[in-house]
Image (cartoon, rainbow, N blue to C red; front, side, top):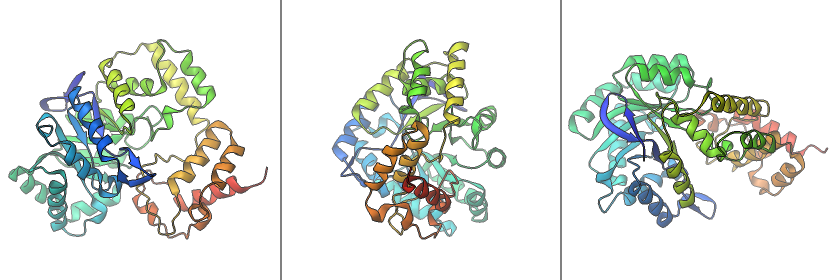
Length: 378
């Protein structure tokens, strides 16, 4: 395993971090984690040198923290730094920060957290936490040792990101960043700005919710021309590890083979390891993706459960596949195979999902577009 600087800390972080948002599940139900498989995966990663584990209150409908807590028993807790996040959308008063922290400590079976984040900060949540004097609460939590380092994850514009970075002496931040999102949200400017201020920068969504792992044929051909031969997943990860401002890259792995593949890739990682020609190839791939892009959904499932039963991530995945690969006939068939109660025409325009979407997608409007596209006769 390769290790990297973690901002101002003397501690070195593994190049690969384990993100517990996409653990293996049973019966297609994200709330039913295959605990035995997930624990094997997490412990195997730790045995191979991963020392940063990331989870959050809503992952797997509240089950992720519980499974991670079980995986870190039998001495594994002492081998890693553990991070989780405060569920800001549920916080109504300052006392809620402490209430959720205590619940999370119990679920994770630990007395303290190495890293604690304000989850998915944007302009509205930033205004909210300031009004609740979150830093007064954080000062007490840090003093008590219940949390050792304070940070935030982020989904908004660079302007908002810069304001948040400048407002407090953060240890670290977590941003969505990959070769498609160079100019999206915090983007490369945010990455480099935070690093210059001394923050460690943790990367989430390195594969854009898996979108970069299965490129269409035209993009596969671009990758085949690159040297050395690598999978699309490894190219995406190596592009991130090439950048000195990146502290660690979280991967939401769903199987043991994925863990092993990413561990091997991390072993080959390094700062400024790509050649100029390789960087040019990644840029060509980025442009090719942007010419085909549909809805910027990462499949995080923050929009679920929908009160009307609409399977929002699945619909956008089908729609994007048609946009990306030009396979409209197959997409229409996949859409028809959905349970009628899960299709986009069941949306009642309540817009509840839009309040939790970290990508700020106008979900109700895009669902209507997807339904029209996927039901229109050729």
